[in-house]
Length: 310
Ligand code: RIB
Image (cartoon, rainbow, N blue to C red):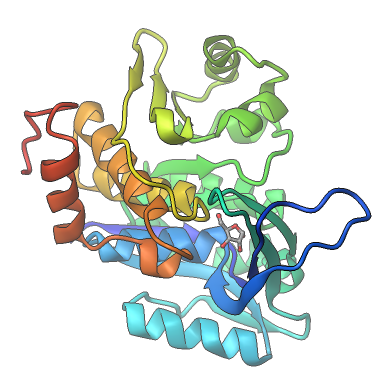
Protein backbone atom coordinates (compact mmCIF):
# COMPACT_ATOMS: atom_id res chain seq x y z
CA UNK A 1 0.00 0.00 0.00
CA UNK A 2 1.31 3.51 -0.85
CA UNK A 3 1.81 5.67 2.22
CA UNK A 4 1.15 9.32 2.94
CA UNK A 5 2.99 11.43 5.51
CA UNK A 6 1.02 14.33 6.95
CA UNK A 7 2.93 17.10 8.72
CA UNK A 8 0.25 19.19 10.34
CA UNK A 9 -1.99 20.39 13.11
CA UNK A 10 -4.51 19.08 15.57
CA UNK A 11 -7.15 21.37 17.10
CA UNK A 12 -10.07 20.54 19.32
CA UNK A 13 -13.07 22.36 17.85
CA UNK A 14 -15.40 24.12 20.27
CA UNK A 15 -18.48 24.42 18.11
CA UNK A 16 -21.78 26.29 18.38
CA UNK A 17 -24.55 26.39 15.78
CA UNK A 18 -26.00 29.90 15.40
CA UNK A 19 -28.94 31.24 13.37
CA UNK A 20 -26.46 33.71 11.83
CA UNK A 21 -22.99 35.17 12.45
CA UNK A 22 -22.90 37.96 15.07
CA UNK A 23 -22.02 41.52 14.04
CA UNK A 24 -19.06 43.19 15.78
CA UNK A 25 -19.99 43.75 19.45
CA UNK A 26 -23.18 41.67 19.21
CA UNK A 27 -24.11 38.49 21.12
CA UNK A 28 -26.18 35.88 19.32
CA UNK A 29 -27.79 32.91 21.11
CA UNK A 30 -26.68 29.63 19.55
CA UNK A 31 -27.25 25.95 20.38
CA UNK A 32 -25.78 22.44 20.26
CA UNK A 33 -22.41 23.29 21.85
CA UNK A 34 -19.95 20.42 21.34
CA UNK A 35 -16.24 19.64 21.50
CA UNK A 36 -15.03 17.80 18.42
CA UNK A 37 -11.67 16.78 16.98
CA UNK A 38 -10.32 18.97 14.19
CA UNK A 39 -7.26 20.72 12.87
CA UNK A 40 -6.44 20.61 9.20
CA UNK A 41 -3.54 18.17 9.58
CA UNK A 42 -5.49 15.62 11.57
CA UNK A 43 -8.63 16.01 9.44
CA UNK A 44 -6.71 15.49 6.20
CA UNK A 45 -4.80 12.54 7.63
CA UNK A 46 -8.06 10.83 8.66
CA UNK A 47 -9.64 11.66 5.29
CA UNK A 48 -6.74 9.93 3.52
CA UNK A 49 -6.75 6.93 5.87
CA UNK A 50 -10.48 6.33 5.40
CA UNK A 51 -9.96 6.29 1.65
CA UNK A 52 -7.49 3.43 1.97
CA UNK A 53 -3.95 4.81 2.38
CA UNK A 54 -1.46 4.06 5.11
CA UNK A 55 -1.01 7.41 6.85
CA UNK A 56 1.56 8.71 9.33
CA UNK A 57 0.88 11.94 11.16
CA UNK A 58 3.74 14.11 12.39
CA UNK A 59 2.33 16.68 14.81
CA UNK A 60 2.60 18.36 18.21
CA UNK A 61 0.05 18.13 21.04
CA UNK A 62 -0.17 19.46 24.59
CA UNK A 63 0.09 17.18 27.63
CA UNK A 64 -3.60 17.68 28.32
CA UNK A 65 -7.01 16.06 27.91
CA UNK A 66 -7.42 17.30 24.34
CA UNK A 67 -4.01 15.88 23.43
CA UNK A 68 -4.96 12.49 24.93
CA UNK A 69 -8.20 12.55 22.93
CA UNK A 70 -6.22 13.19 19.72
CA UNK A 71 -4.07 10.11 20.32
CA UNK A 72 -7.19 8.00 21.05
CA UNK A 73 -8.79 9.22 17.83
CA UNK A 74 -5.71 8.43 15.73
CA UNK A 75 -5.52 4.96 17.32
CA UNK A 76 -9.17 4.32 16.43
CA UNK A 77 -8.66 5.55 12.88
CA UNK A 78 -5.48 3.52 12.35
CA UNK A 79 -3.06 6.41 11.82
CA UNK A 80 0.61 5.89 12.61
CA UNK A 81 1.62 8.48 15.19
CA UNK A 82 5.05 7.58 16.53
CA UNK A 83 6.39 11.01 15.55
CA UNK A 84 3.86 13.01 17.54
CA UNK A 85 5.38 15.05 20.33
CA UNK A 86 3.76 16.29 23.53
CA UNK A 87 4.63 19.79 24.80
CA UNK A 88 3.90 21.87 27.90
CA UNK A 89 1.84 24.26 25.72
CA UNK A 90 -1.90 23.52 25.42
CA UNK A 91 -3.24 21.48 22.50
CA UNK A 92 -4.53 23.64 19.64
CA UNK A 93 -8.14 24.79 19.89
CA UNK A 94 -10.54 26.31 17.38
CA UNK A 95 -13.74 28.26 18.12
CA UNK A 96 -16.17 27.43 15.35
CA UNK A 97 -19.53 29.08 14.60
CA UNK A 98 -21.73 27.28 12.08
CA UNK A 99 -24.56 29.37 10.59
CA UNK A 100 -28.00 28.04 9.59
CA UNK A 101 -26.75 28.12 5.98
CA UNK A 102 -23.95 25.70 6.90
CA UNK A 103 -21.24 28.36 6.54
CA UNK A 104 -18.54 28.57 9.19
CA UNK A 105 -16.28 31.09 10.92
CA UNK A 106 -13.26 29.76 12.82
CA UNK A 107 -10.73 31.33 15.17
CA UNK A 108 -7.88 29.08 16.25
CA UNK A 109 -5.27 29.30 18.99
CA UNK A 110 -2.60 26.97 17.59
CA UNK A 111 -0.90 26.30 20.97
CA UNK A 112 1.24 23.17 20.66
CA UNK A 113 0.99 23.23 16.84
CA UNK A 114 3.47 26.10 16.84
CA UNK A 115 5.97 23.95 18.75
CA UNK A 116 6.45 21.58 15.83
CA UNK A 117 10.01 22.44 14.82
CA UNK A 118 12.35 21.45 11.95
CA UNK A 119 14.27 19.18 14.38
CA UNK A 120 11.06 17.20 14.92
CA UNK A 121 10.85 16.72 11.17
CA UNK A 122 14.49 15.64 11.13
CA UNK A 123 13.63 12.85 13.62
CA UNK A 124 10.76 11.78 11.35
CA UNK A 125 12.68 12.14 8.09
CA UNK A 126 12.65 8.41 7.29
CA UNK A 127 8.85 8.34 7.45
CA UNK A 128 8.67 11.25 5.01
CA UNK A 129 11.31 9.82 2.66
CA UNK A 130 9.51 6.48 2.47
CA UNK A 131 6.12 8.04 1.69
CA UNK A 132 4.80 8.60 -1.82
CA UNK A 133 3.11 11.89 -0.84
CA UNK A 134 3.89 14.50 1.81
CA UNK A 135 0.71 16.43 2.68
CA UNK A 136 0.93 19.69 4.64
CA UNK A 137 -1.09 22.75 5.63
CA UNK A 138 -0.03 26.00 7.32
CA UNK A 139 -1.36 25.66 10.88
CA UNK A 140 2.25 24.85 11.85
CA UNK A 141 5.34 27.09 11.57
CA UNK A 142 6.25 27.81 7.93
CA UNK A 143 9.92 26.99 8.68
CA UNK A 144 8.82 23.48 9.65
CA UNK A 145 6.79 23.05 6.47
CA UNK A 146 9.74 24.30 4.43
CA UNK A 147 12.13 21.85 6.10
CA UNK A 148 9.72 18.94 5.54
CA UNK A 149 9.34 19.89 1.87
CA UNK A 150 13.14 19.84 1.46
CA UNK A 151 13.37 16.39 3.08
CA UNK A 152 10.64 15.11 0.74
CA UNK A 153 12.07 16.63 -2.43
CA UNK A 154 15.52 15.08 -1.80
CA UNK A 155 13.86 11.67 -2.30
CA UNK A 156 11.38 12.64 -5.00
CA UNK A 157 8.34 12.44 -2.70
CA UNK A 158 5.35 14.41 -4.10
CA UNK A 159 4.74 17.50 -1.99
CA UNK A 160 1.11 18.67 -1.62
CA UNK A 161 0.62 21.93 0.28
CA UNK A 162 -2.81 23.16 1.31
CA UNK A 163 -1.92 26.81 2.06
CA UNK A 164 -4.49 27.30 4.80
CA UNK A 165 -5.04 29.49 6.75
CA UNK A 166 -4.48 32.23 4.17
CA UNK A 167 -1.09 33.92 4.29
CA UNK A 168 1.78 34.99 2.07
CA UNK A 169 4.24 32.23 1.20
CA UNK A 170 7.94 32.57 0.37
CA UNK A 171 9.07 31.70 -3.15
CA UNK A 172 11.49 29.14 -1.72
CA UNK A 173 8.59 27.06 -0.40
CA UNK A 174 6.44 27.57 -3.50
CA UNK A 175 9.23 26.21 -5.68
CA UNK A 176 9.32 22.95 -3.68
CA UNK A 177 5.60 22.29 -3.97
CA UNK A 178 4.32 19.84 -6.59
CA UNK A 179 0.64 20.56 -5.94
CA UNK A 180 -0.68 23.69 -4.20
CA UNK A 181 -4.37 23.67 -3.22
CA UNK A 182 -5.53 27.19 -2.25
CA UNK A 183 -9.14 28.30 -2.10
CA UNK A 184 -9.97 31.69 -3.64
CA UNK A 185 -9.14 33.63 -0.47
CA UNK A 186 -5.83 31.85 -0.05
CA UNK A 187 -4.94 32.33 -3.72
CA UNK A 188 -5.47 36.06 -3.34
CA UNK A 189 -3.46 36.20 -0.09
CA UNK A 190 -0.50 34.47 -1.75
CA UNK A 191 -0.55 36.16 -5.14
CA UNK A 192 -2.48 39.41 -4.63
CA UNK A 193 -4.66 38.32 -7.57
CA UNK A 194 -8.44 37.96 -7.55
CA UNK A 195 -8.43 36.53 -11.04
CA UNK A 196 -7.99 32.78 -10.68
CA UNK A 197 -6.00 32.18 -13.86
CA UNK A 198 -3.69 35.13 -13.27
CA UNK A 199 -3.08 34.00 -9.69
CA UNK A 200 -2.22 30.48 -10.87
CA UNK A 201 0.09 31.89 -13.52
CA UNK A 202 2.04 33.77 -10.84
CA UNK A 203 2.36 30.63 -8.73
CA UNK A 204 3.48 28.62 -11.73
CA UNK A 205 6.16 31.20 -12.49
CA UNK A 206 7.29 30.94 -8.85
CA UNK A 207 7.95 27.24 -9.46
CA UNK A 208 4.77 25.47 -8.29
CA UNK A 209 4.16 22.80 -10.89
CA UNK A 210 0.44 22.18 -10.37
CA UNK A 211 -2.20 24.37 -8.77
CA UNK A 212 -5.67 23.21 -7.79
CA UNK A 213 -7.93 26.07 -6.67
CA UNK A 214 -10.86 24.78 -4.64
CA UNK A 215 -14.09 26.63 -5.44
CA UNK A 216 -16.67 25.18 -3.03
CA UNK A 217 -19.91 24.22 -4.76
CA UNK A 218 -18.35 25.13 -8.12
CA UNK A 219 -15.75 22.37 -7.83
CA UNK A 220 -12.13 23.27 -8.62
CA UNK A 221 -9.81 24.78 -11.20
CA UNK A 222 -6.68 22.94 -12.32
CA UNK A 223 -3.63 24.73 -13.71
CA UNK A 224 -0.38 23.15 -14.80
CA UNK A 225 1.03 25.65 -17.28
CA UNK A 226 -0.30 24.17 -20.49
CA UNK A 227 -3.48 22.75 -18.99
CA UNK A 228 -6.16 25.02 -17.49
CA UNK A 229 -9.50 23.44 -16.70
CA UNK A 230 -12.53 23.73 -14.42
CA UNK A 231 -13.89 20.54 -12.83
CA UNK A 232 -17.51 20.66 -11.67
CA UNK A 233 -18.73 18.83 -8.60
CA UNK A 234 -22.02 17.32 -7.43
CA UNK A 235 -24.86 19.63 -6.34
CA UNK A 236 -25.76 18.70 -2.77
CA UNK A 237 -27.81 20.02 0.14
CA UNK A 238 -25.32 21.77 2.42
CA UNK A 239 -25.44 20.92 6.12
CA UNK A 240 -21.99 22.15 7.25
CA UNK A 241 -19.03 23.20 5.10
CA UNK A 242 -16.45 22.76 7.87
CA UNK A 243 -13.73 20.35 6.76
CA UNK A 244 -14.73 20.22 3.07
CA UNK A 245 -11.26 21.44 2.10
CA UNK A 246 -9.74 18.79 4.34
CA UNK A 247 -11.80 16.03 2.73
CA UNK A 248 -10.72 17.34 -0.69
CA UNK A 249 -7.01 17.45 0.21
CA UNK A 250 -6.98 14.04 1.90
CA UNK A 251 -8.63 12.52 -1.17
CA UNK A 252 -6.23 14.28 -3.53
CA UNK A 253 -3.23 12.90 -1.64
CA UNK A 254 -4.71 9.39 -1.91
CA UNK A 255 -5.39 9.83 -5.62
CA UNK A 256 -1.85 11.03 -6.31
CA UNK A 257 -0.30 8.29 -4.18
CA UNK A 258 -2.27 5.72 -6.19
CA UNK A 259 -1.09 7.23 -9.47
CA UNK A 260 -4.53 8.37 -10.69
CA UNK A 261 -4.50 10.68 -13.72
CA UNK A 262 -5.50 14.29 -13.00
CA UNK A 263 -9.03 13.93 -14.44
CA UNK A 264 -9.78 11.03 -12.17
CA UNK A 265 -7.97 12.52 -9.18
CA UNK A 266 -9.93 15.76 -9.33
CA UNK A 267 -13.32 14.07 -9.63
CA UNK A 268 -12.37 11.89 -6.65
CA UNK A 269 -11.30 14.94 -4.61
CA UNK A 270 -14.29 17.07 -5.60
CA UNK A 271 -16.57 14.20 -4.60
CA UNK A 272 -14.95 13.96 -1.15
CA UNK A 273 -15.49 17.70 -0.60
CA UNK A 274 -19.13 17.51 -1.71
CA UNK A 275 -19.81 14.42 0.40
CA UNK A 276 -18.35 16.17 3.45
CA UNK A 277 -20.69 19.19 3.35
CA UNK A 278 -23.79 16.99 3.49
CA UNK A 279 -23.14 16.09 7.15
CA UNK A 280 -22.55 17.97 10.39
CA UNK A 281 -19.01 18.34 11.85
CA UNK A 282 -15.83 17.06 10.23
CA UNK A 283 -14.92 13.54 11.36
CA UNK A 284 -18.40 12.00 10.76
CA UNK A 285 -18.37 13.67 7.32
CA UNK A 286 -15.17 12.14 5.96
CA UNK A 287 -16.17 9.31 3.61
CA UNK A 288 -14.80 5.79 3.54
CA UNK A 289 -13.69 4.44 0.15
CA UNK A 290 -16.88 2.50 -0.65
CA UNK A 291 -19.09 5.42 0.40
CA UNK A 292 -17.16 7.78 -1.84
CA UNK A 293 -17.21 5.45 -4.81
CA UNK A 294 -20.98 5.00 -4.43
CA UNK A 295 -21.40 8.77 -4.15
CA UNK A 296 -19.46 9.31 -7.40
CA UNK A 297 -21.47 6.61 -9.17
CA UNK A 298 -24.82 7.96 -7.98
CA UNK A 299 -24.26 11.73 -7.85
CA UNK A 300 -21.57 12.45 -10.42
CA UNK A 301 -22.02 10.12 -13.41
CA UNK A 302 -22.75 13.07 -15.71
CA UNK A 303 -19.50 14.77 -14.71
CA UNK A 304 -17.03 12.01 -15.67
CA UNK A 305 -18.60 8.70 -16.68
CA UNK A 306 -15.31 6.99 -17.50
CA UNK A 307 -13.50 6.74 -14.18
CA UNK A 308 -11.20 3.74 -14.40
CA UNK A 309 -11.47 2.65 -10.79
CA UNK A 310 -15.27 2.51 -10.68
O1 RIB B 1 -10.46 22.90 8.06
C1 RIB B 1 -11.28 22.85 9.20
C2 RIB B 1 -10.43 22.88 10.42
O2 RIB B 1 -9.75 24.12 10.47
C3 RIB B 1 -11.20 22.77 11.69
O3 RIB B 1 -11.26 21.45 12.12
C4 RIB B 1 -10.47 23.70 12.65
O4 RIB B 1 -9.87 23.03 13.70
C5 RIB B 1 -9.45 24.43 11.80
O5 RIB B 1 -8.19 23.98 12.06
